Amino acid sequence: MIKVPILDRLSFRDYQGLFITILFFIVEGFIRIIVMFMPKFLISTFKLMVDILFPWISRIENAPHVSPLEKAQSFEKMVAYWKNYNCEQHIVRTKDDYLLCVHRIPSVKRQVNVDKIINKRRNHYKNHTSRLEKNNIQVVDNLDQFIRESLPNTDQELALTTQTYHSDSSTIYSNERFTGSATDRKRRSGKPVVLLYHGFLMSSEIWVTNTEEFSNLPFILAQKGYDVWLGNARGNKYSQYHVYENPRNQPFWNFSLNEFATRDLPDTVDYILAETGAASLTYIGFSQGTAQAFAGLSVNSDLNRKVNLFIAMAPATTPKGLSNPLIDAFVKATPTVIYLIFGRKTPLKLALFWQRILSPPLFVKVIDASVGFLFGWTGHNMTMDQKTVSYQHLYSVTSVKSLVHWFQIIRSGQFHMYDEVPSRLPYHTVNTVADHIPPRFPTLQIKTPIAIFYGGTDSLVDFDVLAADLPSPLAYVKSIQKWEHLDFLWGDGIEYLVYPDILKLLQIFNPRLPPPSENSSAAVPLMIMDQEQLRMQQHEDDVKQARQQQQQQRNFKSYHESAPRDKRNSGSRYSSLLMNDDSSLEYALEETLIKNNGSNVSILEEYKTYFDYKQ
Image (cartoon, rainbow, N blue to C red; front, side):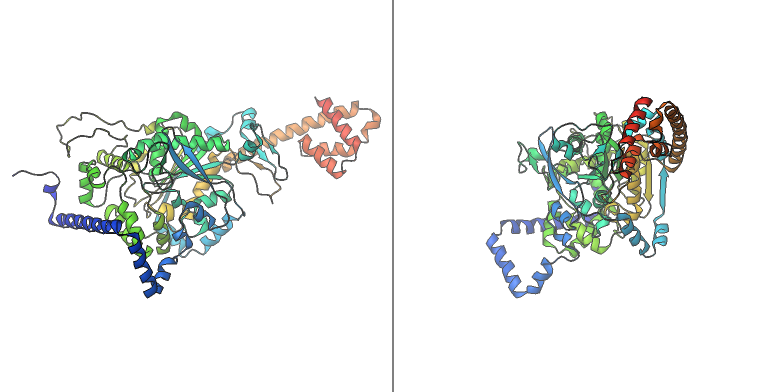
């Protein structure tokens, strides 16, 4: 008897599942065809009849179930809902002529004490301690090694890596000189830059769908003074444009993870750095957003110099596979069969189709059942209200080729480039020598510091395999045992289980901190170290300052004895000022002139004489 691969291994229950799946596809396709060819006036007539006969249905359907964010049609409208943030849209033209939309939150309209709000919510969080214990959080912190490497060794290096902002003046005192026009100088605000990138079948909207304002990472970063950018991969709802190709045609969709990593990411980073004038940025990716960064950094050494820190949330490079054994065996057998199911353009259009037909609460149940069937996720760490809003912005289209690429990776268990000439055999045999091997992404070559956040019950993350393919040590690793994939976007308590760690990482690896708010009068040094390094630095500064004071006193005493007798008394007030703890001559002069309303000319003359003497 001839044995057919895969089909021969199916049980009776597997055949039942296969039959139901095929039947669902047939019914769904039949409904879509009817709706597609139904005249618009007929659909409008039916809708009008329903509105007249059942007005309460229309009111329920049109009104948001949880929040207006649920029905917001674009990223700009979602940001505008909170009324606290400025929002911009930029277009990046890649080297292969795709036009990518990049959203930006450059500043805030109203400053809010984020820490106070988050701490207040934490205090009111029910059973917070017990839930933290249940989450079984584990942290591996190697930041001290990276801080030690990044600290300046000489005073000259320290001068080149520090900068001070004075909020009571429009002038920025720095060793760096801004060049270009006045518009360029205004545009280059000196803020640290952060780029966030979405996952597979998603868009930039996923970062701003949380129902609580400060559960959204971009808003927290903007309030903290960062220049926040949010990327969109080619093909999604914001980036379906090309200089020459039409999205209706197949050539437009001829891209995979290769193009995300080698085209979209570096071109987007270059555009942002050119626009802001920053030397580097911090990259935060989710799911496929981490994969494209791992791939891009591994093949582009120049990109490593432009990204000062890579934060990977729910990283996906070598997923184990799908939870359902039937579907898992099917896609592992021959990934290219996906082309037979979905064609050569975009997959999963049916998800968008049902999203428009079903009410949001019912759509949540459909999605929960689907991800449970495919990945084994429960969604218990997200509230029902949160899923009702987030799932409305969950899906955005991409190419079938990128889906096939992921199934090739799952099949091989290797994080490799797209295989343009896959094997014709639908299965492997032990005595078969591969006719070719697609090149792997050399992730061990990455130089950028890496921080990883992952869930212990995330079926798409195999941390042991991932860590073995990355340079050691990783800067920071945090594991939340009970969390799944989507929890790192919308999990309950994410604002104090994950975001504080991200803010700490941003402060350490960014060479500058944002300038203080207008209400602050203190200058903020932009060099961040850990507590022990700060104590050591403080001790060194104290010793250096004491030596400077001693030298200053000797210099002034020598000058005072050699100065004309009629000048000695006139500068007595200034003499005492120079003998105090402040060693900055500019500060001393400014304070003295302020106290005397700028009228004591003798003090100004004596300062000039003293300065000339010291020179």
